[in-house]
Image (tube, rainbow, N blue to C red; front, side, top):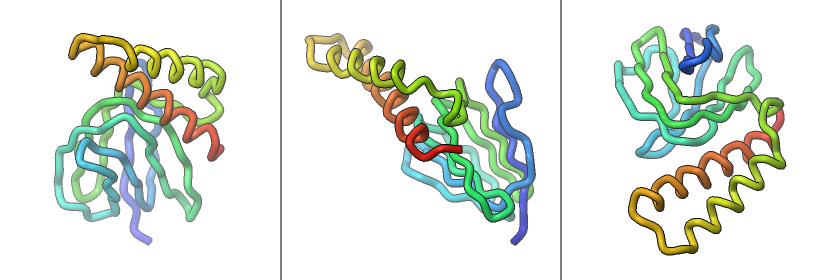
Amino acid sequence: MATFLLEILTPEKVFYSDQVETIVIKTVDGEMGILAGHEPTLAPVAIGTVRIKKDGNWLDAVLTEGFMQITNDKTIVLADTAEWPEEVDENRAKAAKERAEERLQSQLSRQEFIKSQAAVARAMARLKVKGKGH
């Protein structure tokens, strides 16, 4: 199978950089699958998991908001944060989810509501990828 270069960058580090067969990533419009030779695209990345297929094996990670640039031989993802399953603190993610859900139940301003929704999404993505392993 043809491969392409995937780079996942955060403000702190190069999270991932290698040749891959495919990725499945969450965008604001839903999940998007990318293979080598994909049409050039710019897309906003949503909070969720990214699935990376390399050498026939799948790796999962959590990404928060960002942007992605796709060319026919390279995909660059710029994300606020990226974590492997073993980097996720499951207890902390559960506590964050509970706090955010409690905030969603109270009277919030529009901005507070959006922040709480994002916090729930981050926690859910972390718990999802933690359950799958790496």
